[in-house]
Length: 192
Image (cartoon, rainbow, N blue to C red; front, side, top):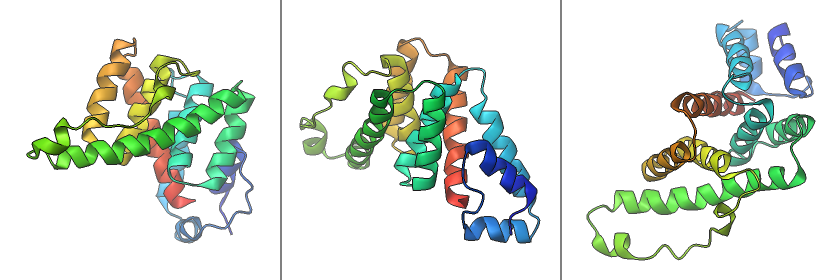
């Protein structure tokens, strides 16, 4: 049995309140304060003044895709579409997330092997044409790339995309809010 806070949070996200989550059940049974914190954090980060609603939902969708969380994929896809996201923007969110997973593994390996010149001097040999002219726009595509790279813990990619997104005009506060959003949605994915 879910408590009212959980039901309200799920309703806000357009998620069927009858979903079964062991973590939510355990937290509700213990009347955990974390549930209230999570609901507030989700609401606060999705309503950032530095991200419009569509951007917030697309960033949340990138987390859901990254975590392979079908309930959240469906929810954030629907919410993004309500805010005007197109099929192309939704598809590019999936593609960006997949591409960053490729890059995060590859460049994290290179980072770990920092004393091995062979690996660091070889061309990546990876096709990344989606990055050239993204339908999401270069600044937002780079912001999403940064967010997914932070989620996946790739230092090289985080550093590179943070510099790039700033070159495309993003403020540090916008970047910070995007990373906060990604962190909170990751937490939501763990609980759901």
